[in-house]
Image 1 (spheres, rainbow, N blue to C red):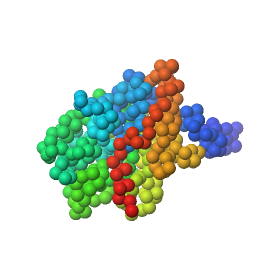
Image 2 (image 1 turned 90 degrees about the horizontal axis):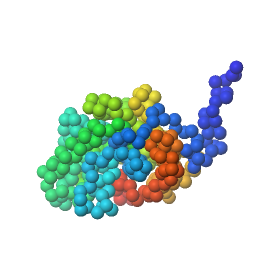
Image 3 (image 1 turned 90 degrees about the vertical axis):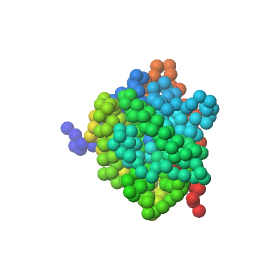
Image 4 (image 1 turned 135 degrees about the vertical axis):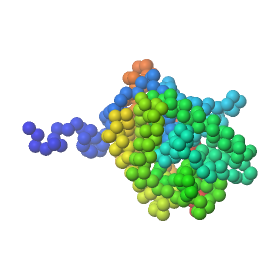
Amino acid sequence: MRHSPYEGLDARAYWRTGVAQAHIAQAPEMDLYRPKFKIRASDRVFAAGSCFAQHIARNMRKWGISVIDREPAPLGLPPERHSDYGYGLYSARHGNIYTTRQFLQLTQEACGRFAPKNWIWERDGRFFDALRPSVDPNGLESPDLVKRSRQTHLKKFRQALGEASLVVFTLGLTETWEDIESGTVFPTAPGTIAGRYDPDRIRFLNLTHKDVLQDFLETRRLIKRFNPSVRFLLTVSPVPLTATASGRHVMVASNYSKSVLRGVVGQLSDAYRDIDYFPSYEIITTPSARGFFYAPNMRDVLPEAVETVMKTFLAAHGDTILEPENRECAAESGQTSDDIRCEELLLEAFAQ
């Protein structure tokens, strides 16, 4: 008979044996992640989310997992320029989706349930889709071209979601910017890439736990209306905020954001059989890593960190997605933070 419910638990249940006496480089052997469902080579993956999601999508493609790409680069665009124009990053050409509100509104728009307002921004006579401002870095010649491009994108986005058996989504931020009149949210503030900041028309919005939870549940409900068998694998980005407009110190604001997101995905994973959580956030931010997984700016995630994350993922799913001879070297990405496209980095230019 046990004297305490904590007596005789696995080593993974105690901080001393599960963390302090372990090295995070051994993460694949640390039993950090027990999948709720298996991912298989036959799965069709829809990948989206904040900047860190690009690492996940690229590694999955490298392993031969079928990551959907409904908006491939046009012929004639050199491969080294694909990511500059938002091609090959995700399953559709929407760029980074930083918040659950952004993901919800894009899904609603693609389903004909939401019409964004004030979403065409101008800079030096060129016009930008403010809901994905980085996919045309030089803008387009007219608002009409921006509208036509977006209509094509929405069709491809819905097609990609419709054919997916698994949605892999990385939650990145709670902070966003909202059009006061319509509630439309933007991935970056006007004046960063294009547009002009007008406090009478746009305001700062910091999503709460309740907001994020409701946003994702509504997104899930909409997707399941036309793709009822789809499952969801959620992660939280370990990349801190570049800047905050909350009035808090950026370190405090970043911790709030990540805490809210991590709390929500934990609740979702506990409550729904079709939602699982993969702990990439914990692997990179754990004290046992001693900060070695970050570049000197304490923000960019190093390739060694991505490799450890993906090897942990592979340890859990490799038997169903890879042939045995391909498992050992599959997670060696060789990718650096310079390969990642992230609008948020532009906020560094405003630092004093």
